[in-house]
Amino acid sequence: MNLLNTLTTAADEEQLRLHPLPDHAIASQNEHLRRHYALLLAAVLTAQPVVSEPQTRLLRLLLDALKLGDMRGQLFDQARELAPELLLEAVRLVREAGFAQHLVVDALVLLRLDAPLNDETARLAGELANFLGLDEAALVMRAMDTSDILGLGATEVAHSQSEAKNTDDDDEDADEGAEQPPTLQPVQLAELWPAQLRQPLTAPALRAGLQGGLWMLDANLDVDFPWQANDAILFFRNGATLNTFAKEGAVKLTGCRLVDTVLDFQGACTITLTRCDWQGNYNPAAKRTALTSNGQALTVTDCQFSTRNARAILVANNALVLTGSRFTRCGHAEMNGGAVCHTDHNRAIENCRFDRCLASYGGAICVNYIYKINKCEFISCESLSLEAEVGIAVYVSTAGNNSIRTSVFRKTSLYVFDVGGSIDEVAPGTQFNKSNVYYNKGTYPTCRFPDSLFSGGRVIKL
Image (cartoon, rainbow, N blue to C red; front, side):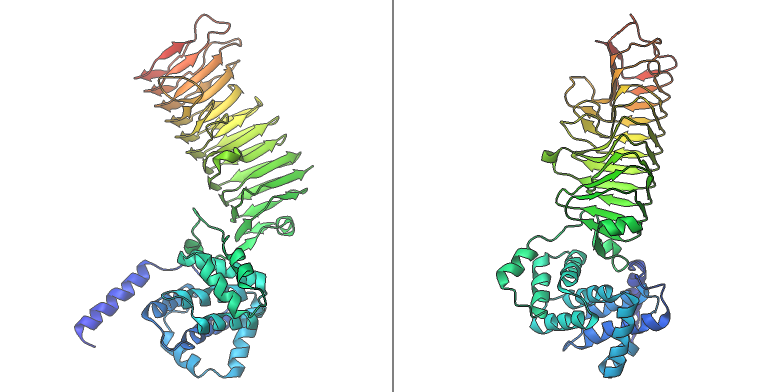
């Protein structure tokens, strides 16, 4: 090998190390299973007239994800001389271990990587799926996974797999099903593959508890029991809502990622979210709230929300505890409380950040009474139904006997409709940077702000 080839090989190896795939779903399984799994992938590739360079590179990445290292040469040699008995043994191992759907996706990605599926490769994929025991519905789902991983429209892959299954459905029916593929934006399935494949969110799955995995909800689902989810991804589409009517117990979500998700709770359970990341780009015409708790206590800790065109949280008639969380670009122009709307006074909101949230009233927070809003930061939030020199982050109907304390407002304001109550200290120890305070005097002729700092802002009595 000359120096140029050596350098090229070394550079190629370095790039593979710099851009690895996530660990494979079966990376923790025994080596015997992993080797047979890899052998089936090599057999799929060698069934083609020519294996392309991109296909061999991707196989190398998959082998690393399988914790096998670069054994492409050995696998290709073995695959080209594959005896029927070894093929049957490999298929049996993969099927019984529950990784048949993962194998079909990996095979489809390899086959479709740099060229459309032709009739021969489509039949090959279909026969592999049949051999592994996948039904039509599972194959359609896995074809959609392949499309999302490769950034394709699902029509081609879904149509090809339909041909490979040799079904009696006419082309019109196949096209109708293929024209409605789910999109995983902002979740990119390519970021999760080959560790995750989507699966439908069902009542039995919720009752059993979601432990990891990517769960998709296409239509409204009602359940009457509490449920839990740990390290799971919940992706909703078609405006679906998960309604929970639990009369007792606790709903807990820990370390979850939620995309376009809408959760609505009615009943008497408690709700806890910890270290969750909630992202969404909702239909503005629907006027959605991502998380609604009507009558249940809600505790949110160390979470992130970015719910464009939707209010993030609504809590009615019970307590809200919100700590260490961030809200970015949450809210709807025609709803109150872009990040949080709370109709009870029993709350604690501390150490939270609200950035560029918007609403009709209260770009960040809309409440009837100020109660325990401490050490929070409000940045460039807006209340679109209020005329003000600077956008309004917090809208309060009545100040009452409490106040916002030791917080920071940056290019956004505080609006108190009625000072009221028995004290007149509304925002002690709070910084207003290019931000204003708007208030009605209520019962008091003045409104005091002890130890507060105004830099480029002012107090405006309405």
